[in-house]
Length: 66
Image 1 (cartoon, rainbow, N blue to C red):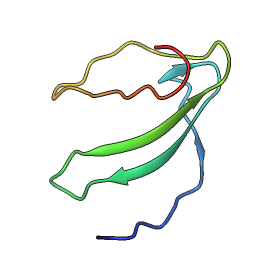
Image 2: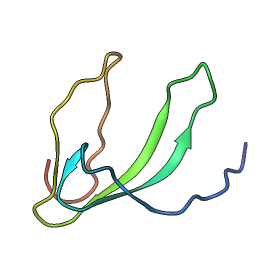
Image 3: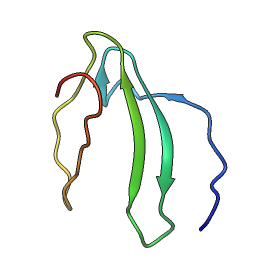
Image 4: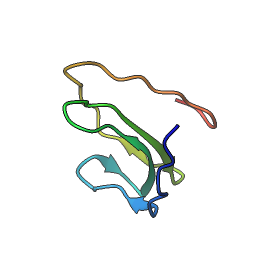
């Protein structure tokens, strides 16, 4: 097991989302891995800009609606 130093919550870039969105990095793989895991929090009315991921993406919604 590897302990990862917790990083500060970051406000997400405006070009990725509409409204206020924040995220916490849970895991960021080391090269050549492209693995990323983030906890994303949306303010009321905020949403993501639709886009695609070349290798796909998995979302786990744990609160609210998708």
